[in-house]
Length: 365
Image (tube, rainbow, N blue to C red):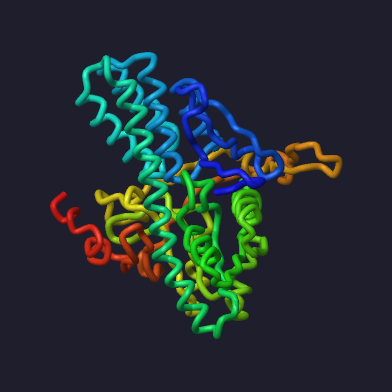
């Protein structure tokens, strides 16, 4: 996508040919800065500290982290150690485990002397595949928006989304926002209601930033405003991303997603999750019981980051000092509340049968 007229991916090998340049998402939306990762440890820290975030991008960052690790230790022990270190950075997004398993398999098939080169090549392939998958998700999802627009007689389609599932969460295009970009670029009028998404405010900070950079009409709303907008007919469709989707169609996503799905269901509004196949965990059937929910630092709730009037970036406390805080980062939306799942292969019903209709090879796994 483009920022200030220049095309960017969220992650790429830097000009030196070996370090990995990522967009520092902790600095957005007020400062656009690149950070160079030069070691496996720095890659793991970037994932843990949410310098990079979003399930697909976490997976690609882990893949490049493996490449950085191979520069130091390309032995079998080095491969296994890198997988263990990166795999512990964050627990919920299944793309992390998926990418590491793929990298481990590819590297162990090579002799140690060739593992650095193979690691960079495999990581680049994973990144390119993510871009292609997200572009395809955009095309399939845009058909939904086009039909809704036609039903409205050509008026703008109002989409509500939660958290950030745009190109900043992937390598390019995004998942939940890819249909918006695809439809917008094709001339379909689309307007996005952007949940602020506490804590961390990824909607107000990141989704609004990238929609603004792309020229996409949008309005930032408080998290609790979505149900009100739905009740008054101001939302046509909800589209969210996913950090892990079970084989039966349960969707784990940023905390608060479940509440939006309940409100959409109560008001007869279609609710879609958009995700690549790497986000489907074919080993899980019951999202509520099986998906590990990351518990993050209380400070994300007690403090907010922002910009003072004079332009200084700062962090301020907003919760009564000493109050206990819980900070579950994700919740699970049961498949019964999901209208459909938009993937790179098409749109599936949120069920095992629906997903297998697009991925029949998984019947054998």
